[in-house]
Length: 455
Image (cartoon, rainbow, N blue to C red; front, side, top):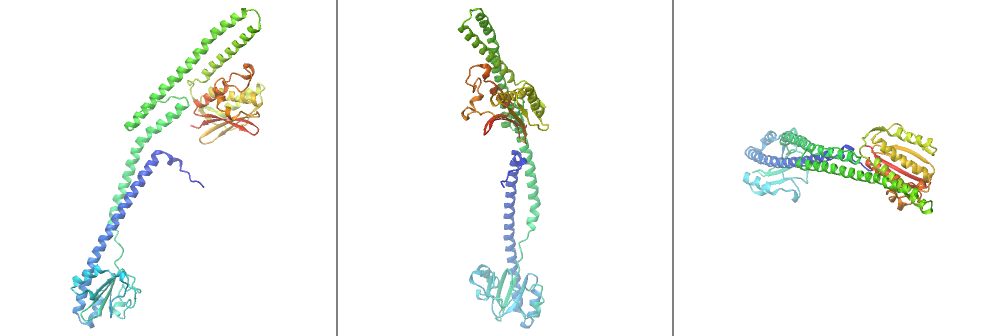
């Protein structure tokens, strides 16, 4: 199963906070490892120094006392970290386990030859791991198999060998335990400070994103500049851009409305003059052309009105809106069916959206004999599907059909073919709401899918 990132983690603020936290944690872990290794190195050096001193003193003591008193002395110097055994030979081991540097230091401190001292980290023969001496067996530290860290053999003046084995123990965690609270507080401080700084950066960007989404639906929303200087400049640029775009759209719409309106007067004048002429075939053709011009002019005015971005957005019940459209068209004799959906509120320009859906349903009935309307709602999008029983539209015409005054019907009669503005008006309105139209050829019929964002 494919893993998907949790929705809350998709936000830039949380991703950056997580990134900084991981970076800090890694740096702290590296610091702890360095401290641990340094602490272990220091402790090993201290342990070995103490080992040298105690072993040297023990050897000097056992050299001074009589052989029959050595058991008592051995018992005195054996503790939980060190055991001493009397033997006829030193520890046996392989060459790679010898520690020559430590051996040399022992020899120098005790002022004896290297032949009388041996230091190794592992033994290969366990012949002397147990001792017959009662004094040794009663000591708390007598591992049966000599599982220790260090083995030292030294020869006394009377040729008897003393075999020491030591348990140096694990490195101390005292230093880490003292440093860890400081590191933990540092981590918390970095996370808090990073979160506050990221919030200062991402909150203005979030407001900017929301304003951009509103503007895509035809709503103007000025964002208050805040945050770092670069973010402020971006917000100011966005505010300036949406203001200029809004003025540009208004100017285009007003210009188109003015041209369409002004065409009514010369068209009316021409019609009056033609009516005074004698009846003829040319007169009929000219009157028909004027009728087409009036239809186009009227359609252009309607296009401007329906494309008006001044209508306020408000919450409506989209299911009730679709049901009312289908009921109205059904009363006019059109074959329309709406698959009822539960109540669903949507924030939009209700009149414009009603005009767009009405245009699409009319097209479905006119060219596909009937229309079946369904509403589907999910987390991110709202889908309105309008299905008919027609032959569909060729793939190469799917985009061209949205161009103004483009009609699929070959007839030039506006009474049968319309003006070719219905689809263009519908898509313009849908796109002003931040959505889009999708055309789908089906095995049996054709589907127009209205996709609107759930924002």
